[in-house]
Every structure is written in structure tokens, then in C-alpha cells.
Length: 401
Image (cartoon, rainbow, N blue to C red):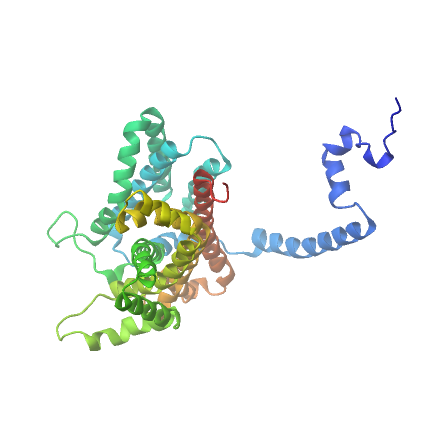
């Protein structure tokens, strides 16, 4: 029996070259003279950018603008004697998040350390301003919720679900308050601002635009001509104008269409404009998911005798939404960042507060520090939504058969 000798190209390199950092560099960065040249050019370009940036960040940057104005960035003009109500909302959020994480995330990951390290970074930024105690309480609340969920997973799963459903109405109630004589005195919405206002507008836009957009998508595919025509008209008209147009119409022109004596709050008008805008785009995304469902699914649902409502609710719509999870989350991330446009109509969201801080003579020339801080905040929330989307896709088996 004859055997053919293996060629030199088929022989694996020694383990020291396959599994060491030096071997990885040699294979991926210096595999050829062109790779080596591109690596050196990229390295020189990175050094030319990073060295001045690190020097500026460690010597010239005035980072004290962040801790000295951290409450202004977070809460805007909210009465300082009532700020404890906002911190209470954050503690409740940390508690609910910890319970959800303990119930539904069974394995450790980098995100676990990330969620713990984020408040620690906040403590470092805000130690000088005296609010680090609240960040420490958030860590304790989050870890307590996680520990409770691990201790009694079945009971805490129901508690976490109920807490998630009731969290947003409870937050609005705590922030808005009641009468002046009550334990929670009322706070007008014109005093809401900062990150709190940005989160409220984006959460309202996401929560309320989702069912509205699903109904529009179903209406566009309806067999009733009137329903289909109205849905198409709404979607195409809203998608044909920019969000800033809807915001200006809500702030300036809405009062002309209302009876005399009826005044809608400015924050409510901005929220309605955001919901209307997001629902039109979400409807098209959901419609794409509906069109991706094979006709056999409809026929199978009809064959087992399901009604039209049950067929759409239990068979078609879950599959359609599952297919467009990445698109929906991408839209939600864009919606969160688009809330900065409310600063153009007089609402002091996070960007509006930043412009107010930069107008202070004491902080002139700190534009780069402030906007880098804002970019970091928006990146944190955008990454969190993107990470949650990826985990949901893995859990639901999106892209797998």
C-alpha cells in the first residue's frame, strides 16, 4: 500500500505560532509585505491621534464641569428639594432591572460586569458633587433584586413582570406628584429637563408607538378599503415630513385647532409628535415582517379553524415581530437619539441643558468636555438596547431554523 506524503503547505505550524500572541500578529498583521505596510500606517495614524487626545484629556481638559453640573444634566430645573423622588425612580429601576437580570439571564457575561461597573464610573464622576451615595444605593438595589431573583426564581419572575408593567405609570405619578398640600407636591412639566426628560420622551415614544405601529401595519394589509386607505395615507404623510416639522406643528399650531380654553402641555405635545412619527416608520417595518411569513402559515391556521383574530395574534404576528427584531431595535435607538430635537422647540432635554451649561461664563471653552460626556451617555443607552436585542435574538433563535 502506498501513502502520499503531505506537502509542506498542509503541515500545521508549531503550537507556539498558532496559539500565542506573536503567532496571531504574524498571521493577521504581518503576513505579507503589504499587510505589514498597512499595519505600520494604521499604527502611525493611531499614535498621531491618540497621543494628543490622551495628553489633552489628562492635562488640559476641564472635567470638573461634569461633576459640578451632574444634577443639572440629569434632572434639569426640577426642584432640588424634591430630587429625592427622581432618585427613588432610579432605585426602583435598578431593583427591577436586577430582578429581570436574575430571572432571565442564567449565565454570566461581560454585560454583568458592565452593569455593575457603570454606576461605579458614575460615582467617580460625581464624587465631588456629593451624589455618589445615590449611585451606591443604585448598586445595592440592583444587586438586591438580582439576589432575590436567584433565591426565588419562580416567585420573582411574576414580581419582575408586574413591576415592569407598573414601573412607568408609577414613575410618572412620582415625578408629576399631586396637589401642593400632599406628600408629593405637584411639579409642572416646564421644570422637567435633562436626561430625565430625554428618557421620558423616548420611553413614551417606544412604548406607545409600538401598538400603534402594529395596528397601522395590519390596517395597511386589511381587506377593508377604508381602513387600508386611511392607514396608507397616515403612513405616507407622516413619513414624508421630518420629525422637527411635527414638533413645531405640535408646539405652535396645535392650539389653533383646539377649542378656546383648552391648553395641552408642551411636554405632552412633544410626546404625541414623537409617537406619531415613530409609529409610521414602525408600521412599515412590521409590514415587512408580515410579508416575510410564508403563505403556508396562513393556510395552516385556517385549516385548524382559527379565527382571523386568533390567527393573527398567535400565529402570524409573533413570527413577523420575531423576524424584524433587529430593525425595530435599530429604530428605537434612532428614536432615542432623535429626542435631542426637542431642544429646538424650547424643551430643556439633555442637549438643551448642555447648551445652558456652556452659556455659563464659568464654563466657557468646555464644549468638547460637555459634548463628549453627552456622547458617552447616548452610547451607553444605545449599546444597552443593542445588547438586549442580541440577547433576545439568541433566546428566540432568530436566523436559525
